[in-house]
Amino acid sequence: MKKSEETKVENRQEINLDNPSQNKKNLELLRQFREFNRLMMRYRSAIREVTTKLEVLNDELSLEGDRNPIESIQSRIKKPESIAEKLQKMGKELTIESIEENLNDVAGIRVICPFIEDIYKVADMLTRQDDIHIVRVKDYIRNPKENGYRSYHLIVEVPVFFSECKKPMRVEVQIRTVAMNFWASLEHQMRYKKHIPNQEEITRELKECADTITRTDQRMQSIKRTIEQYDNKK
Ligand code: 0O2
Image 1 (spheres, rainbow, N blue to C red):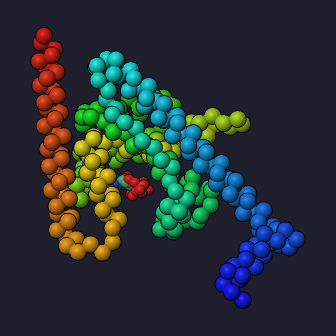
Image 2 (image 1 turned 135 degrees about the vertical axis):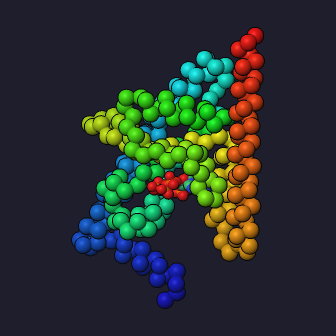
Image 3 (image 1 turned 30 degrees about the vertical axis):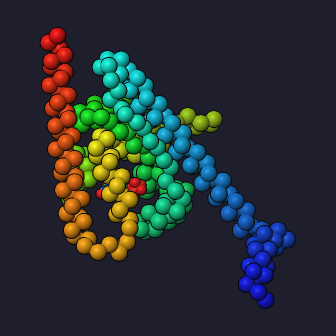
């Protein structure tokens, strides 16, 4: 039998609804698929809730200060294969309950701010809202990673109202300056390229770039403060 014919026969067996045990398996798969889709819908809803909060803050703060403390907001739902890979690495089972219990970053929001002080202002205003529960804070700006990575990470829980229940949903919020994002995006692309020669040299160069970016962020903030003082005196 040719390979393509073998595959056809296999496929036909998989969807043979006359086979009771196979049928049961298919129904179970379908149920799990629906449950997974429902969970992803919940995470998407949580992203909407938190994004709206951030947009409202940005609108309000832009009236006060004549500029936007948030440059842009990006969001993503973790891909099913990344979810499976992460759970496997953690030695956890791949079930709906396990995803909810063990993963903090299925729903991810990235907030890009012009200046370092905007990051802390936005984080503070978001986490002071009484329906937001802080699960974890990692300040990689005050404590950068060894490779030079800088960003402010928050895991928050936000209640989302559905037709028959209210569910607290976890969302990872990464807040960075434009400059930090520039470095992290390029480093992320390169980090996943395999078999790079001169690995140590590249790591050192990337760290140097991160340090240059840090100094630039600090100088830009200091220029902004000088201009604000001048403006206030007028
Ligand atoms: P992706 O593709 O961006 O989703 P946990 O959140 O507890 O599961 P961990 O590692 O303690 O895991 O979380 P942490 O340190 O808060 O950071 C996780 C995310 O931050 C990463 O997600 C990246 O998005 C970003 N990040 C952390 N370190 C680096 C870094 O050195 N370089 C870059 N470019 N990004 C970093 P993922 O799942 O790794 O990737």
